[in-house]
Amino acid sequence: QSALTQPASVSGSPGQSIAISCSGTSSDVGAYNYVSWHQQHPGKGPKLIIFDVSDRPSGISNRFSGSKSGNTASLTISGLQPEDEADYYCSSYTSGSTYVFGTGTKVTVL
Amino acid sequence: QVHLVQSGSELKKPGASVKVSCKASGYTFNSYALNWVRQAPGQGLEWMGWSDTKTGNPTYAQGFTGRFVFSLDTSVNTAYLQITNLKAEDTAFYFCASGSAMGAYWGQGTLVTVS
Image 1: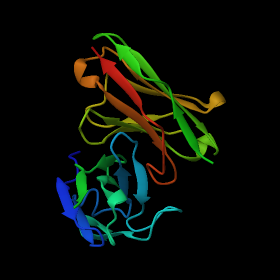
Image 2: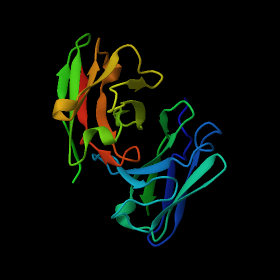
Image 3: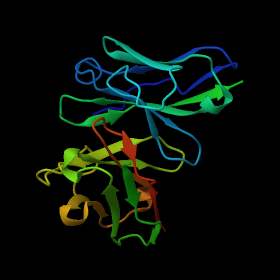
Image 4: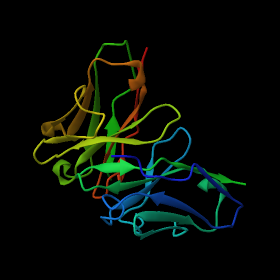
């Protein structure tokens, strides 16, 4: 199972919106609505921010939103804030009853 | 409140074995699968596999068969990851993760250093 493909880095100025793509196949992202997004600050563990493509866990800002089209999922961060600077990983359930993570995207707030 | 608490850092020599624990609290242990995730220094997240907490049956991702063993002790709500014949490339943080969505809850991570 190959890792899902994400851009290595995305940047934006405070207040702007950015989008991170997560490209998979018809055996993972395209097959199930079980795409999640995880945020990881330096030296910290991951934190779930989106599950089931577009749902937010309790306590997660509505500035984070998720969507999916075909084999590609996307995370949008609106009203970018300094504390959003972190690494972001997508993950998906697969047809092999396994999970796969994306390659990860470093978000920089300019 | 859900907590996943992992055992402390380990320093091991090549060829040795290590066993990492992940103790769950705040929910019924067999409600969710227990996943294991590896993160090598400066690298991304890799899903290693999961334990079915109802049956104990493990599932291993490609690249994590043979030297990696998942086990459970349901009497103490604890999952274990054992790695045998350690190699330098096993140096990494190992996380446990659980929840109705994979990764809804994460352990704090255990650093295993092989040197």
